[in-house]
Length: 571
Image 1 (cartoon, helix red, strand yellow):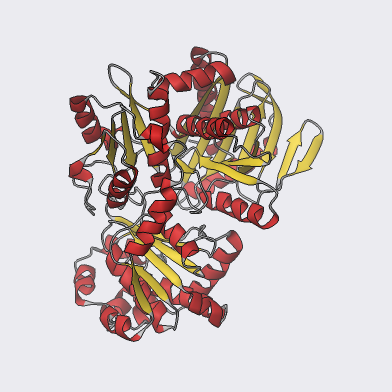
Image 2: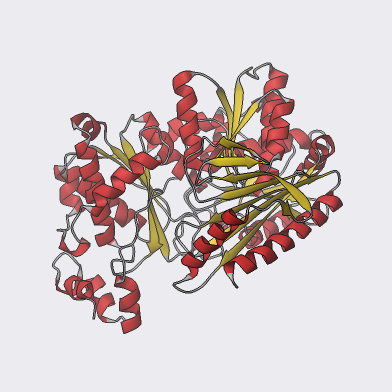
């Protein structure tokens, strides 16, 4: 029996409900719950809810909060007085965790600003900036299954912590004693005695005002005959989007009412991920009944957005690259029409996002810069250009359905996109075009771009080691041909080197265990392992003159890469 298990059962800081859960565990469950500490990584902490050191619960959250409090205290009195904002979404235990974190920070003399009701990740990001806080936290597990929750920590600029600061926070948490040894605090007493302040209406209105500013032509939007349906998928964004619809007076904009209220069980869904067609099931049913043109779904914490377009016979879902290309072109073309396109405009995308965005931006005289996967790297770049005024931010996006139109938030903001997507669809609707037809028009101008993601999970304790060995084998191979085309660039983001034939240059992005190949026909392939589980992802992008050619090439490269990596992984 685990020593930690016995210690938790004996601890006065572990409540009776959790002890009851512990007593009912099997030997195998005890081993899984205590064999390691749930990791607090550079992006925060996420895991299955339950008792044990390898689970997310009040005790493990309390330990993380103490580490964060110690880090903030080490930064001086100004950091403590500027304070910390906490928001949470609809998930199980989210409110309880928010109160636990608030109690710990408040008892350490740190000013705490706390939302009482579920709010979105982008509003948390905005709130840090609006209140000039030192840090903040979002309690969410995004679109993971109901049994998950997590903590995401943000810096003073409203972006997720950069790598350097994240490492300091992780180090501070690791210095804290075991979770079961830390005394629990009463939130009601902490609220009375500590500097904890509820926030809500004022910040809601300020955020909504900023979101409303993404509209280019409100008068035209208010005259549209486009029909739109929105669903927050039982998450935190429903009340915000409803308030925005009232504020902007967007006509023919309706809601999936059965999914508008926060629900920790996601009772009408099999998946709360807007990348999955199943997430649109109720919206599609309602859309067919109401003859609706556009369906928009936002994930539980309001940072990712997906859309489906009526094609005349059915709804077609757009992927993240397709949506990103449409929105980017719309933003740049609207700025150009209104004479507001800056001469030093810049767009940020991740290294695994379609190259179509670069082509579009270039046609408008706008620079595109790549960052590593993770929206915090886009936030970091926005902060840099604010300081030196070298560029004017115009758009940031990633293939995994995350977009940012205006940088008053510094994480991906699906709420901005709900408004912008509706305006964009209304703009094309006025020209008797659907978004699918608008996308086809872009393909005629820039060529057809298609992308594919292959995800491989290797079960067992040796999975992560197999993946690392495979990547090392790829590095040593120095491949010159791939899927019938010559490799013209090989980029190793761990050694930060790009090799082109006999030439070599330094990459400027932070080190990351990612490999990318660029081929002579414009195809690219990126290999990226997961940082938290034994999984490796193959990202593939192609460009051809026709959709048929692009799909054929995409399938061909996908089969080649899959077979090649099976040998490397020894599957």
